Length: 293
Image (tube, rainbow, N blue to C red):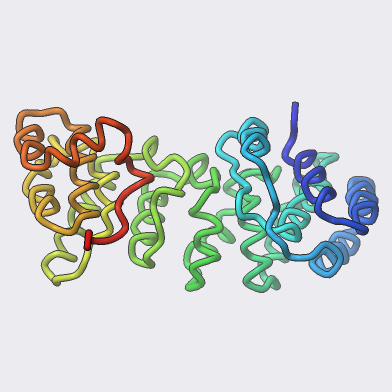
Protein backbone atom coordinates (compact mmCIF):
# COMPACT_ATOMS: atom_id res chain seq x y z
CA UNK A 1 0.00 0.00 0.00
CA UNK A 2 1.23 3.49 -0.86
CA UNK A 3 2.40 5.60 2.06
CA UNK A 4 2.58 9.41 2.22
CA UNK A 5 6.38 9.25 2.54
CA UNK A 6 6.70 6.84 -0.37
CA UNK A 7 4.50 8.98 -2.60
CA UNK A 8 6.27 12.21 -1.70
CA UNK A 9 9.66 10.63 -2.40
CA UNK A 10 8.51 9.46 -5.81
CA UNK A 11 6.96 12.77 -6.81
CA UNK A 12 9.80 14.99 -5.62
CA UNK A 13 12.49 12.78 -7.17
CA UNK A 14 10.68 12.88 -10.51
CA UNK A 15 10.91 16.68 -10.58
CA UNK A 16 14.30 17.01 -8.93
CA UNK A 17 16.22 16.63 -12.19
CA UNK A 18 19.96 16.34 -11.55
CA UNK A 19 19.37 16.51 -7.80
CA UNK A 20 17.15 13.43 -7.63
CA UNK A 21 19.98 11.21 -6.38
CA UNK A 22 20.92 13.81 -3.77
CA UNK A 23 17.33 13.99 -2.55
CA UNK A 24 16.95 10.19 -2.30
CA UNK A 25 20.26 9.83 -0.47
CA UNK A 26 19.34 12.55 2.03
CA UNK A 27 15.93 11.06 2.76
CA UNK A 28 17.53 7.63 3.27
CA UNK A 29 20.10 9.16 5.61
CA UNK A 30 17.42 10.93 7.65
CA UNK A 31 15.75 7.61 8.45
CA UNK A 32 18.98 6.35 10.04
CA UNK A 33 20.29 9.33 11.97
CA UNK A 34 19.34 10.84 15.32
CA UNK A 35 21.20 14.07 14.55
CA UNK A 36 18.53 16.74 14.20
CA UNK A 37 21.15 19.03 12.63
CA UNK A 38 20.99 16.85 9.52
CA UNK A 39 17.27 17.49 9.30
CA UNK A 40 17.79 21.25 9.60
CA UNK A 41 20.51 21.19 6.94
CA UNK A 42 18.23 19.40 4.54
CA UNK A 43 15.33 21.78 5.19
CA UNK A 44 17.60 24.73 4.46
CA UNK A 45 19.02 23.24 1.27
CA UNK A 46 15.79 21.87 -0.20
CA UNK A 47 14.62 25.05 -2.00
CA UNK A 48 18.05 25.71 -3.51
CA UNK A 49 18.62 22.15 -4.67
CA UNK A 50 15.09 21.18 -5.69
CA UNK A 51 13.49 24.47 -6.70
CA UNK A 52 10.12 25.92 -5.82
CA UNK A 53 7.99 24.79 -8.74
CA UNK A 54 4.54 23.36 -8.15
CA UNK A 55 4.39 19.63 -7.61
CA UNK A 56 3.01 18.21 -10.87
CA UNK A 57 0.45 15.54 -10.08
CA UNK A 58 -2.05 13.63 -12.22
CA UNK A 59 -5.62 12.87 -11.13
CA UNK A 60 -4.62 9.25 -10.50
CA UNK A 61 -1.76 10.38 -8.26
CA UNK A 62 -4.12 12.62 -6.29
CA UNK A 63 -6.38 9.60 -5.86
CA UNK A 64 -3.37 7.66 -4.54
CA UNK A 65 -2.78 10.41 -1.99
CA UNK A 66 -6.34 10.04 -0.74
CA UNK A 67 -5.81 6.28 -0.50
CA UNK A 68 -2.62 6.75 1.52
CA UNK A 69 -4.40 9.10 3.94
CA UNK A 70 -8.11 9.85 3.56
CA UNK A 71 -8.70 13.48 2.64
CA UNK A 72 -5.05 14.22 1.83
CA UNK A 73 -4.88 16.41 -1.27
CA UNK A 74 -1.38 17.66 -2.17
CA UNK A 75 -2.54 19.58 -5.22
CA UNK A 76 -0.88 22.98 -5.10
CA UNK A 77 2.08 21.82 -3.00
CA UNK A 78 5.52 22.95 -4.13
CA UNK A 79 8.43 20.61 -4.77
CA UNK A 80 10.48 22.06 -1.91
CA UNK A 81 7.44 22.01 0.40
CA UNK A 82 6.78 18.35 -0.39
CA UNK A 83 10.46 17.59 0.24
CA UNK A 84 10.28 19.28 3.65
CA UNK A 85 7.28 17.19 4.70
CA UNK A 86 9.00 14.06 3.38
CA UNK A 87 12.06 14.90 5.46
CA UNK A 88 10.03 15.21 8.66
CA UNK A 89 8.28 11.92 7.94
CA UNK A 90 11.61 10.19 7.19
CA UNK A 91 13.31 11.50 10.30
CA UNK A 92 10.48 10.19 12.47
CA UNK A 93 9.90 6.95 10.58
CA UNK A 94 11.61 4.66 13.10
CA UNK A 95 11.18 4.40 16.85
CA UNK A 96 8.81 5.60 19.52
CA UNK A 97 11.48 7.86 20.99
CA UNK A 98 11.70 9.93 17.81
CA UNK A 99 7.93 10.21 17.66
CA UNK A 100 7.85 11.37 21.27
CA UNK A 101 10.28 14.17 20.41
CA UNK A 102 8.38 15.24 17.31
CA UNK A 103 6.15 17.93 18.92
CA UNK A 104 9.14 19.79 20.37
CA UNK A 105 11.00 19.50 17.09
CA UNK A 106 7.98 20.74 15.14
CA UNK A 107 7.58 23.68 17.54
CA UNK A 108 11.21 24.71 16.98
CA UNK A 109 10.71 24.60 13.22
CA UNK A 110 7.50 26.64 13.37
CA UNK A 111 9.08 29.19 15.69
CA UNK A 112 11.86 30.05 13.24
CA UNK A 113 10.06 29.46 9.91
CA UNK A 114 9.27 32.10 7.32
CA UNK A 115 5.84 32.25 5.68
CA UNK A 116 6.68 29.82 2.90
CA UNK A 117 8.11 27.31 5.34
CA UNK A 118 5.07 27.65 7.60
CA UNK A 119 2.77 26.83 4.72
CA UNK A 120 4.76 23.70 3.87
CA UNK A 121 4.97 22.48 7.46
CA UNK A 122 1.30 23.03 8.25
CA UNK A 123 0.15 21.33 5.05
CA UNK A 124 1.67 18.10 6.32
CA UNK A 125 -0.14 18.14 9.67
CA UNK A 126 -2.37 15.13 9.03
CA UNK A 127 0.62 12.99 8.03
CA UNK A 128 2.82 13.53 11.08
CA UNK A 129 3.21 10.83 13.75
CA UNK A 130 2.51 12.95 16.83
CA UNK A 131 -0.70 12.92 18.83
CA UNK A 132 -2.87 15.79 17.65
CA UNK A 133 -3.10 17.36 21.12
CA UNK A 134 0.68 17.70 21.21
CA UNK A 135 0.54 20.11 18.25
CA UNK A 136 -2.44 22.15 19.49
CA UNK A 137 -0.52 25.29 20.42
CA UNK A 138 1.35 25.52 17.12
CA UNK A 139 -1.77 24.80 15.09
CA UNK A 140 -3.58 27.51 17.04
CA UNK A 141 -0.86 30.01 16.17
CA UNK A 142 -1.22 29.08 12.52
CA UNK A 143 -4.97 29.62 12.58
CA UNK A 144 -4.53 33.00 14.24
CA UNK A 145 -1.98 34.12 11.68
CA UNK A 146 -2.77 37.32 9.81
CA UNK A 147 -1.17 35.74 6.75
CA UNK A 148 -4.00 34.21 4.74
CA UNK A 149 -1.74 31.65 3.06
CA UNK A 150 -0.68 30.30 6.46
CA UNK A 151 -4.28 30.09 7.68
CA UNK A 152 -5.32 28.31 4.48
CA UNK A 153 -2.46 25.81 4.78
CA UNK A 154 -4.38 24.44 7.77
CA UNK A 155 -7.96 25.18 6.71
CA UNK A 156 -7.80 24.18 3.04
CA UNK A 157 -7.28 20.72 1.50
CA UNK A 158 -6.01 19.52 4.86
CA UNK A 159 -7.78 16.65 6.67
CA UNK A 160 -6.24 17.57 10.03
CA UNK A 161 -9.00 19.93 11.27
CA UNK A 162 -11.77 17.52 10.31
CA UNK A 163 -9.98 14.66 12.02
CA UNK A 164 -8.90 16.40 15.22
CA UNK A 165 -10.77 19.66 15.94
CA UNK A 166 -13.66 19.66 18.38
CA UNK A 167 -16.89 21.32 17.27
CA UNK A 168 -16.07 24.72 18.74
CA UNK A 169 -12.65 24.89 17.12
CA UNK A 170 -13.90 23.67 13.74
CA UNK A 171 -16.72 26.22 13.78
CA UNK A 172 -14.31 29.01 14.69
CA UNK A 173 -12.09 28.06 11.74
CA UNK A 174 -15.05 28.21 9.34
CA UNK A 175 -16.10 31.62 10.68
CA UNK A 176 -12.58 32.99 10.36
CA UNK A 177 -12.49 31.76 6.77
CA UNK A 178 -15.49 33.98 6.08
CA UNK A 179 -13.95 36.94 7.90
CA UNK A 180 -10.73 36.79 5.86
CA UNK A 181 -12.48 36.15 2.56
CA UNK A 182 -11.30 32.57 2.27
CA UNK A 183 -13.33 29.98 0.37
CA UNK A 184 -15.22 27.33 2.32
CA UNK A 185 -15.40 24.61 -0.33
CA UNK A 186 -11.74 23.52 0.11
CA UNK A 187 -12.33 22.78 3.83
CA UNK A 188 -12.11 19.00 4.20
CA UNK A 189 -15.19 17.53 5.87
CA UNK A 190 -17.22 20.73 5.71
CA UNK A 191 -20.45 18.82 5.13
CA UNK A 192 -19.61 15.97 7.50
CA UNK A 193 -18.85 18.40 10.32
CA UNK A 194 -21.98 20.55 9.82
CA UNK A 195 -23.73 21.17 13.14
CA UNK A 196 -26.59 23.30 14.55
CA UNK A 197 -24.21 25.59 16.44
CA UNK A 198 -22.33 26.45 13.26
CA UNK A 199 -25.57 26.96 11.33
CA UNK A 200 -26.79 29.42 13.98
CA UNK A 201 -23.47 31.27 13.92
CA UNK A 202 -23.65 31.55 10.14
CA UNK A 203 -27.23 32.81 10.24
CA UNK A 204 -26.29 35.48 12.77
CA UNK A 205 -23.27 36.45 10.69
CA UNK A 206 -25.43 36.76 7.55
CA UNK A 207 -27.94 38.94 9.42
CA UNK A 208 -25.20 41.25 10.65
CA UNK A 209 -23.72 41.57 7.15
CA UNK A 210 -27.10 42.29 5.58
CA UNK A 211 -27.94 44.86 8.27
CA UNK A 212 -24.70 46.65 7.55
CA UNK A 213 -25.35 46.58 3.81
CA UNK A 214 -22.39 44.31 3.22
CA UNK A 215 -22.25 41.26 0.95
CA UNK A 216 -22.57 37.72 2.26
CA UNK A 217 -20.44 34.86 0.99
CA UNK A 218 -22.87 32.54 -0.84
CA UNK A 219 -20.96 29.53 0.50
CA UNK A 220 -22.26 30.39 3.96
CA UNK A 221 -25.61 28.76 3.15
CA UNK A 222 -23.93 25.39 2.73
CA UNK A 223 -23.44 25.18 6.50
CA UNK A 224 -27.02 26.28 7.15
CA UNK A 225 -28.65 23.85 4.71
CA UNK A 226 -28.97 20.77 6.97
CA UNK A 227 -30.70 22.81 9.70
CA UNK A 228 -33.01 25.12 7.76
CA UNK A 229 -36.21 23.77 9.28
CA UNK A 230 -35.04 23.43 12.88
CA UNK A 231 -33.62 26.98 12.87
CA UNK A 232 -36.48 28.45 10.80
CA UNK A 233 -33.98 29.90 8.35
CA UNK A 234 -36.64 30.46 5.69
CA UNK A 235 -36.85 34.27 6.09
CA UNK A 236 -33.08 34.57 5.76
CA UNK A 237 -33.08 32.35 2.67
CA UNK A 238 -35.94 34.33 1.15
CA UNK A 239 -33.75 37.40 1.53
CA UNK A 240 -30.85 35.55 -0.09
CA UNK A 241 -33.10 34.59 -3.02
CA UNK A 242 -33.62 38.32 -3.60
CA UNK A 243 -29.88 39.02 -3.58
CA UNK A 244 -27.02 38.55 -6.00
CA UNK A 245 -26.84 35.72 -8.53
CA UNK A 246 -24.34 33.75 -6.40
CA UNK A 247 -26.52 34.19 -3.29
CA UNK A 248 -29.62 33.09 -5.17
CA UNK A 249 -27.82 30.00 -6.46
CA UNK A 250 -26.53 29.04 -3.00
CA UNK A 251 -29.92 29.62 -1.38
CA UNK A 252 -31.46 27.36 -4.02
CA UNK A 253 -29.03 24.56 -3.24
CA UNK A 254 -29.65 24.95 0.49
CA UNK A 255 -33.43 24.86 0.10
CA UNK A 256 -33.25 21.77 -2.09
CA UNK A 257 -31.74 19.95 0.89
CA UNK A 258 -34.66 20.89 3.12
CA UNK A 259 -37.44 19.25 1.07
CA UNK A 260 -40.23 20.85 3.11
CA UNK A 261 -43.40 22.68 1.98
CA UNK A 262 -41.86 26.02 2.97
CA UNK A 263 -38.70 25.24 1.00
CA UNK A 264 -40.66 24.13 -2.05
CA UNK A 265 -42.72 27.33 -1.95
CA UNK A 266 -39.56 29.46 -2.02
CA UNK A 267 -38.03 27.32 -4.75
CA UNK A 268 -41.08 27.84 -6.94
CA UNK A 269 -39.80 31.36 -7.52
CA UNK A 270 -36.47 30.21 -8.99
CA UNK A 271 -37.36 27.44 -11.46
CA UNK A 272 -34.34 28.16 -13.65
CA UNK A 273 -31.91 27.60 -10.78
CA UNK A 274 -33.78 24.52 -9.58
CA UNK A 275 -33.48 23.07 -13.09
CA UNK A 276 -29.72 23.74 -13.18
CA UNK A 277 -29.30 21.99 -9.83
CA UNK A 278 -31.34 19.01 -11.05
CA UNK A 279 -28.97 18.52 -14.00
CA UNK A 280 -25.86 18.86 -11.82
CA UNK A 281 -24.80 22.07 -13.57
CA UNK A 282 -25.25 24.01 -10.35
CA UNK A 283 -23.57 22.61 -7.23
CA UNK A 284 -21.67 23.87 -4.20
CA UNK A 285 -18.31 23.72 -5.93
CA UNK A 286 -19.62 25.53 -9.01
CA UNK A 287 -21.43 28.59 -7.72
CA UNK A 288 -21.66 31.64 -10.00
CA UNK A 289 -18.91 34.13 -9.24
CA UNK A 290 -20.55 37.36 -10.23
CA UNK A 291 -23.77 38.97 -11.36
CA UNK A 292 -24.89 38.26 -14.91
CA UNK A 293 -24.20 41.15 -17.25
